[in-house]
Structure formats: C-alpha cells, structure tokens
Length: 330
Image 1 (spheres, helix red, strand yellow):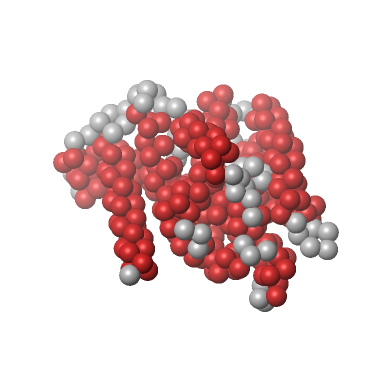
Image 2 (cartoon, helix red, strand yellow):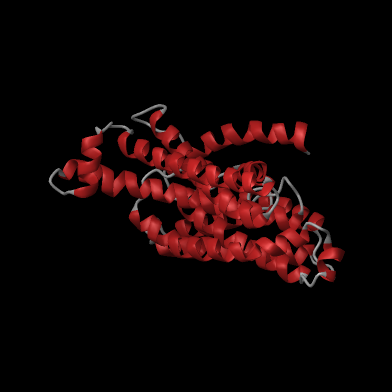
C-alpha cells in the first residue's frame, strides 16, 4: 500500500512538472519586450502568413526557451552526479570549478575571434571542462579518489580559472553587456544555432547519466561497502565527473556561467522523490528545465523592454535556498 502511494506521488510530480514546464513555454512565447496574443503565438508556430509573429515566436522565443530548458536540465543532472560521487550535499559544478573550466574554454574561443562559430565555442567549452575535470581528478587521486580532495581541488580551480576568465574578457573586444551576460549567465541573443551546438553534448550526457543511478546508490553506503559489492570506486567517480563536465560545458556554451542550479535542483528532487538516484536524475532534469526557463522568462519581462542577466534570478532563488540548507538540512 505504501509503495503504491509513493508511486502515485511520483506520477503526480511528473505530471505537475510537465504541466508547469508547458505553462512556462506558453508564457515565454507570449511575453517579452513585445507581448503577443495567443492567436499570434499559434500563427507564429503553425503558419508563415504573419512573418512578424513567425520571426518572434519561431526564430527568437521558441529556441531561447529550448536552450534554457536543456541547459537547466544539464546543470541539474551534473549537480546530482557531483553530489553523489563526493557525498557532499553542497557540491555542484560551480563550487567544484567545472563551470569555470568550461567558461574558460568559451572565453578562449571568443578571445581568439569574436566570429567564432557556435559549434567551436561548444567544443572549446567541452574541452575546457574536461581539462578541469582531469586536473581535479589528478589532484584528488592518491591511490584512491577522496571526496574531500575532490571538493578542495575544485574550489581552488574555480578561483584560478575564474580569474583568468575575467582577465580574458577584460582584454577582449566584447562589449561590456556581452561580458556581463556571460559572467552572470543569460540567453540574450541565443537561437537555433546555439541549440544545435549544445544538443549533441546534452543528449550524450543526459543519457549517460542515467546509467550511474544504481552505482551512486551503492556509493552512498561508503567506499568500503561499495567496493565489496563490486563497484569500481575510482572508475565510477571518474566517469561521473566526466559526464558532469560534458553536461556543464553544454550549458555554459549557451548560457554562460550560471550558479546554484546544480545545487538547488538535486536537493528539491531528493525531497520530492527520495534518495534513489535512478529517480533523482530524471526528477532533477525536469526541475532544472523549469527553474532555468522560468528564470529566463522573469529576466526578460521584469524590466522589459530591457532584460536582466538570467543568472541574477537563479542566484536570487538559490542563495536563500543554500542558507536554508546550511541552517536546517546540513
């Protein structure tokens, strides 16, 4: 009876999440610097009779929503993986330095040329994140990988790479608004080409992450117990770190440096579906899509026709949640 009730709760959560995400999609297509009617949105999606509505809905707002939703899913799932392998409830891509490493890859690609194609920026982001993950893993490995050493190496890497990013952007030919948008996170000006750039890495990372659910569950028992049950500890941590790096890079290549998503969503997923990582991973993906797409919507309309960097909204949500975790959950 209890299992049946819990299953019903999971189904209710999934349906509620999908409905919420659909509502955010609808509002994202309607509201912006210029509000559209529902009939104009439908026309923009289904016909080319009104080129004005078609351009706004199909060419600008729909790809921007998809970019935000997929980037949010990537960051949230990366957070689940990192919290699982470090057994640290405060681990996320930003704190462990992977976001800064991916951001450095993007900054270098942009510094080389302001006309660098999006696929090259995404590839540079992935390369930077994998380099960062390799450095973190190398410094944390002393016969075996330690969650504490992983976290400390990540914090040091985040500070170091973050300083290099600021230096590159300060000496590049980017406008101040573009630099601020990258550092604070946002989707200003993104479209289909950005979506096509992140999609291969996002699909690979999200699918690969689902295979780590059972291993992360066993890893929660402790290294000695997990090893006795046949889990290869170092390979599991290294593989999860690699997948988290790819996911983070996919998001950073489009959204810039976004904080707190990989911290908040895994915890909310745990509250809603429990500690089973086989459920937490898809739940966090859905929550990440909702959080980032909603934050982007608010960033676009709160001071319309101008917009705020989306990362300000996620920080406004995530920082109080972090304080709540520190006070009541950790």
